[in-house]
Every structure is written in structure tokens, then in C-alpha cells.
Length: 477
Image (cartoon, rainbow, N blue to C red; front, side, top):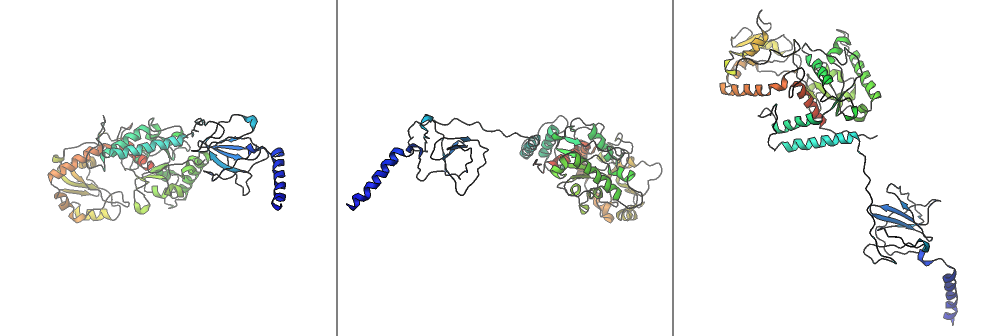
């Protein structure tokens, strides 16, 4: 009887619930649901059921009132410690009768509930829009791969020149790199600045390579681009030799005016264009044949630490970094061209063993002259050439041309007292082999107007190209 009195109220309550309670079809229960996601917080506009697409799955949030809504891939998930829904990832079902307000769900690897399973349609993948910089870096990536691959492949044919021999670290890799440069390398020249300091440089002096390169790159139609968005590197067109001539106060020993000029110029282009700040100057370069080239870069820390410095004064003790900086050949063009300077007698017909003529700059040259000036007919060493003697004729008929250091380190030191013994120890056969190799790579140091493939202009540009391959630029904007 006690049990009967206890059960009667429960039966009555169950009957009332079955008559007046909610539709049981809107209540969904999952035992150990797979792929459970974090919950989402509803808002006043949230429909009773949330459906969110995620990589071919549907994330469904279910409450007791039915309904659904699909949210796109870029939905932000707001987390809540007291979520109103439970969230579960399941394959997309096909909905049939919305009037029944029933969400029929298909669980993976289980029998469908109340309907047949229909595979979800493939969602179109969103394509990321690539910027010009993305495409530029992709081209450089392909160039790096092609250069690496060329190291162990057969030599590529070239109508102008096929580099071979031990003068190259790897002739195949160099050739492929050069061809890749010709195919895609672009330089943007900033137009700001006025001559004579900017867009100008000496073309007839020991610093002639500054003016020669500035003129050549500004006239070049293959490598120069007028669109900075397509550029791999950016050229700062000031001449250090012209800064010394027109900005520096003679005998003042004050670098301040030169540094201020360079600082102001970098500030102008950094304020007008986004490219300097984007890379902190890493894809920018300038040239300097003057000894004060390294000192000039110290005016702007990023110019010194990040930019590609093309320097005749390639002195590591003064901060030259071979991994990012470029050695700049110093060529004295007294007439502005090399006409008449190339060539000479064959190796076997050169009558003099060694020749040098030059001023007493630095500590090495006085020692050289002390040992050899007017001491030996095979060793023609002079402070000043005798009247009527041609410097270039002496070079042509000498087997070796001495290049002792001046104040800077642009040339190597020698073991001076043993010079003749060292040079005579080289056999005629070995000398001819050395001479042929010099002739073979001579084209890389020739100056032409307009420039020719593989000449000094292109080799300087190729060195900048190689440094640009060493890093990648990212646009965070």
C-alpha cells in the first residue's frame, strides 16, 4: 500500500507532462559525443539552433526550441563559462520537413536517424589574394632553387659566354644565377635629389666607377623599373665622391655635413615611400668608390647595418660585411672609356718581370721602393715614371704588375725582399696557364658604354642580386 501511494502521484505527473509538455523531438541527447568543440555564446538575435561550417563539418548548437543557422568560416568564436548550448561537429545532414521543427542529425559511422544521408556539397575554397610582393618573393624562391639545382647539372649554352674553369667557385651555379638575374631582377632608382650630389658622379678619375654606374643604371631599360612595387632592390643615387667635393668643407675633418645630407635624404624617401621602413633598408643599396664610403653609411644606423653597401673600400676592419656588402672594382678611367687599354703582347713575349709606379702612400710603398727602385732591370719599380714613358705600355709588356697597399686595404701586401725569387719560381707553363685564366675572366672587369653582358656593370649588379637572394621581405600591412 505504501508503494502504491508513492507510485500514483508519479503516474499522474507523467501523464500531465505527456499531454502538456514540449515536443520530445526537440530534445537531443548524445552519449560521448565525438569532436566536441568549444561552446558559443548566443545573442538576442540568435536563433534556437546554430549551425557553423568548419572544413566540411557542421558545428551544431542545439536548444529546446528547434531551428538552425549557418555561420561562415570567418566567424569568431566567443567563449563562455556558462554556455547555453552544447556544440558538436558532425557531417552536414539534409533537412526535409521544417514544419516539424525537427533537426535530424547523422553521426559518423552510425545509422541515419529518420532520413537518408546525403553527402554535403563541396564548399568552394577561398583563394588568398597574393600581393605583388608575394609574387616577387616567389620568383626569388624559384631562382634560389634553380641555382642550387644547376650546381650538378650540365652547362647551359649561351651565345655570349659560357663560364668555365677554376676561377669560379661553381661555374654552373654562377651562370644560372646570372641568367636568373637577367630574367627577373628589377631596380628602382629614387628620383629625389638634384645634381651634382645626386644622379651624378665622376666618370674620368680614380672614382670614375661611381659616375659610370649611376649613369648606366639610370639609362638601363632592362633592369630599371619605374614601378617601385615591382622592384627587388632600391638604389640611393648619391655619389660619395660628389659629397666630398661639394658638401665637405675642405681640411675641416668634419664629416657632419656629409652625414646630415645622407640622413636627410633617407628621411625624405622613408617619409614619401613605404619601402625603406618595410625592410629597414635591407633591400636598398648605394655605391662608393671613395675611401669615405663606409663613414658615410654611419650617418644612418640601418644604412650601415642592413643596407647593401657597394664599396671599393672592402675593409672588414672598417665594418665591411661580405654576407651583405659588395666589393666595387676601382677602375681609373682617365678618358671615360677603356678604348686602347685592352690587350697587349702574349704571355711568352712579355720582356719585363715586374712593374710598379706610384706615390708613397701608406707604409708599404716606401719599403718597396727602398728595395727595388733602380736596383734591377727585371724589376721596374718607380715613384715617378721617366719622362716619355707610357704607364700603360709598361703594364702591357710586364709579366706581373705589383699592387702594394696605400693607406687603404684595396690591394694586398707583399713579401718585399723576396719578390723576384717568388716570381721567378713560377714556371713558364704555369705562368701561361695563369695568364689565360686572367684573359678568360677579363670581360667581367671591362667597362662599356652602353654596358655589355657579363661586363663590370652587370657583375656589380649581379653581386647586388646575390645579396638580395639572401633574405626575404614581408609586408605586414
